[in-house]
Length: 413
Image 1 (tube, rainbow, N blue to C red):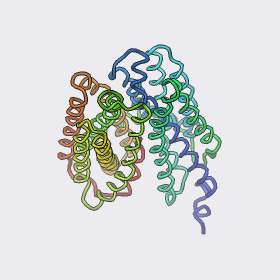
Image 2: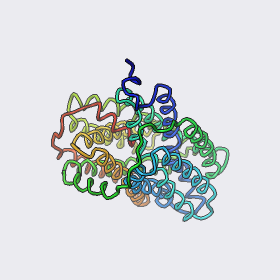
Image 3: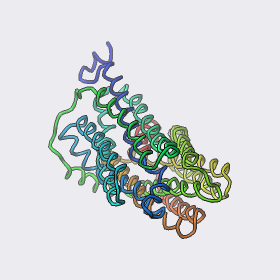
Image 4: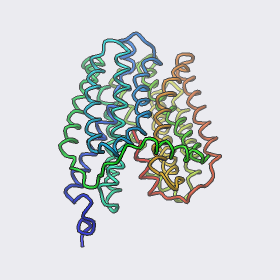
């Protein structure tokens, strides 16, 4: 008896393939749009006459909007439909991205970016739940892997394409080039996404989410893991935000296109996060989490010299360490939550993107005060604080690398 015959309520084989392709496209569009301004921050700063810290708010406003939208969107999706929410969110994000490219005032750009983050919350908050509900459990891991591939590739392409496009026009042109790519991915998502089989509308229950969150936060381990997410993601985004300014100024003086190629270092996280899942099962989560943070600190130190090879190697190591730590922490929080695991993951994602929003901009003050060396010191301080939190973690639930890998996919971007 086939899986489809044994469980007729789940998506059929053909529907699974369509759903996998649709979610790949959704990840490409959503995570590309989320970080589309990061590679062109120096050009945005020049166009509006602002410094690195203010320019970086174009990233912070988007991730902040996303962080605040995660819990409400996950609740609203249970009432209005996950598929409908994802379609509406991506289309709204595309329209807002066009608004970003056409903005004549900085406040217009920041408003569009904040609203875009809220719209993208309709994808990030519900995508994994939709896959888990529609696809038979024996096939869901493969589908999650494809969605994560879309997230990772979208995060890279959303940084790389605008950077390369700067050689041919302004930052507005660079955004429009990526928006055209994201529009094609969105059209593919809308066309391919099959009708849900297992969705039953329920009343919106934001109060239930908040109550579950309060209960979860009584666990000191979950509080620590959320703190780790906040600190590490803040430092990670700050590194990529302000490294762009450093690379395009003296003494390195790369073009915007050449500097954007360093975003390929992001792919190191795909390898390290997978390896971390296996290592967590063998050596324990706390050891792997601390090792990942330590590795990121070593890579960060290598970016200090004004040498492009050292910077490149350091960025690869820093990125690999960050994603090893993030993968371990995000899987651990799900393992600790004996109930309300969806809310536990949502709390982690909120902390993760709030760190990106708040610290990703605040570290800019160090960049203004003391250049890249001061920025490295500020990011290292965040990582060391995260290491202190990690060292204070108890063993929690038994290691389960499959759980670590599945949950870590939720926020890889």
